[in-house]
Every structure is written in structure tokens, then in C-alpha cells.
Image (cartoon, rainbow, N blue to C red; front, side, top):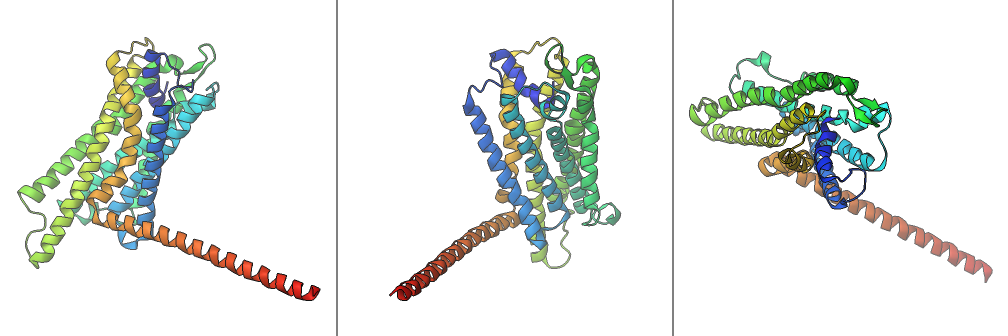
Length: 349
């Protein structure tokens, strides 16, 4: 059993419908539409930051990492759903990589850890601005991002190690390692949800207290107009980051609880109706979560909103230019053919 496969199998074990049967395609179509929208939206975020030099800040680079993790998660989820309905998972590679969807789980944890780093970075930038040594810079943020992916990969290694094809049961299973796998999944859930929640809650509570209550951030020394503008920008950024984090935990705290419950009952298969209903919700909630972040950026960030507009205009203009070039080339080719035909006709006369 795997993290993502369990979400599907809890519901299918009760209803009796197989995820590979090809029946009930409407939910699958809906999920794939959500996935396509999410991939396009998150790709826009990556392109906007890459395209606009002023957007290349430590915060935006971390948000790009979240977008890349969301793209990976959405693509692998689509592949997983397609393959799980079309081919049997009857070998070690398929069980470890596809059925367990280990790479997708790595991306999910990378999202959680990146949001945690974001909260700590904003805490030091806003509450402890004088401690420069603790601040992220454009030079070291890439090392932090690489570290996030390494930690995520290492934490998910037990799933890759323990899950294998069981020839006796003809299914992917941890075999006699279910207890060890349960401990590993507990560690993953702890690292993905509980620890980030504590760190993020502390950082954003302190930031909100400093921004709105003690008001020690952006004290009125200098031009009041510039200070007020800077304060509004900081408040918008904090609101954006808090919203993204809240949406993440709405999706992943139930996910973590469900996984612990499922792995604790894997041997007995005693899934109650509440677990089944939660699993059915999670099938939609995870892709929706990974698809919604770009819309949160555009709703709360003027920079991203302007970036989206610039990107769309460039795409439209580029398409129109290509269209005009094609028409021009076609017209030129037509005139050339007409001239050749005219000269040919004159020669024949």
C-alpha cells in the first residue's frame, strides 16, 4: 500500500468498484480538468518570475519552488491515475515508483517544507530585520531549496524500500514491514504537517502581532507616505503567505490523519464509513490544493496580477505575430507561384 494509492483504495474497498475497471469516468475527467488548470496556472507563476527581473526575490523564488512541486505532484497524480486503471502493478518497479507514487509524496513534502522556510524567512525579515546573518539571499536561497528536496527525498525513502510486489497476494504490499512502514509514515506526517504547523503558527503569530498590534514594523521614521506604502505591501504579502499556508493545512492535516489511520488498519482492512468519505474528499482536495495557489497569487498580489497580464498579452501578441507572419509567407508564396505561372504561360504562348 502507498500514501496516494491508499486514498483511492479505502473508498474502492467499500464500494466494490475497482480503480482499474474504467467505470465512473466522470470523477476522473473532473480531476484531470483540475490537474490541467493547475499545471497551466503554476507554469504561469514560474514563467512570470523567470521573465520579470524585479520578481526575482527570495520570497518569489520560494513560491516558484512551491509551484514546481505542485506541477510535479499534479503530473504524477495524472500518470498514477491513468496507469492504475490500465495496467496491473505486478512488478517491483511499478509497486515502488508508480503504485506508491513516491515522487509525488516527495513533492508534497517539499511544498510543506518550503512554506515553513517562507514563514521563517518572513519572520526574520519583518520581526528581526537587524539580524542580517539569518536572512535568506538570492545567493543562498537556491541551496535551501535543494536542501528541501533532499530532506523530502530522504524522508520518503522508507516507502520506496518497504513497498514491493507480493507474488502470493498478487498486489503491492509492505509485507512483514507494515509496522516499520507505519512508523515511517508517522514520521512523514509529523514532518509534513505537525512540525511545519508549529513553526509557521509561531512565525506568523509574531508577524501579525508586530504588524497590527504593537506596530513595531515600519515605525514612522522618514517619509510617512513611503512608510505607509511599504507597510501596506508587507501586510499584503503576509496575508498572501498566510492564506497559502492555511489552504495547505486544510488539505494536508486530514490527509495525514487519514494515512495514519489507513496504515494502522492495513492488515485488518477495517475501514469505517467516515474514513471512506474522507478518502473520497481527499481524492479531489489534493489536486484542487495544488491548482489553487496561482489564483491566490493573482487575487492578493499586484505584482503577480500584473505579471499574469503581461504574460497573457505577450502570448496573444506572439500568436498574432506568428499568424501575421504565416499570412505574409502564404501571401508571398502565392504571389511567387502566380508570377511563375504567368511566366510559364507567357513562355508557352
